[in-house]
Image 1 (cartoon, rainbow, N blue to C red):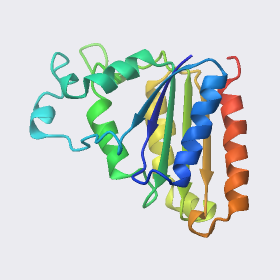
Image 2: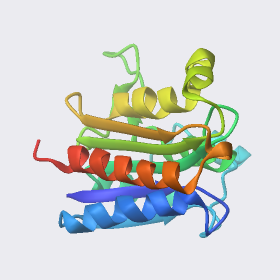
Image 3: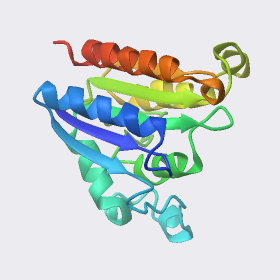
Length: 200
């Protein structure tokens, strides 16, 4: 397996970093090649510039500013996101990564004379994992519609293999979490990773 882990949190000692460590350890235990993209630590620039927007539909130029990420997306067969949910969605840093990297001819194919809508271009990705933390409860997040979860599992998921395996785990009520709830959640992450990495 070739796993790309997109990690997004500004604080090195956050609980999300513990989730990331469990995810990466399980991947390595399974013999996966792992590429970790730590967006904050590596200073990823999340803003889509005017020039990038003007080149958006030009496959000869659109991926050049994010060449490492575009190549890693094409390389991986397993894609995993680890991030905190803020205002029911991903942080601006992660949203900016999606804006700049999920490009035409990288993540999807644009409409053409034979196709009226976009088509997936990441169908080599057969495993998709989403791991997050939420200050809100499960019920409130569900009432709002869980837009972050939907963006990644449905939006990004649509671009992957149609028979992909997907897993999701969230620690809700993070602001009132305890060492016990955090330990239980890390066990839950391990179980979700076992499911994700089981033979297809």
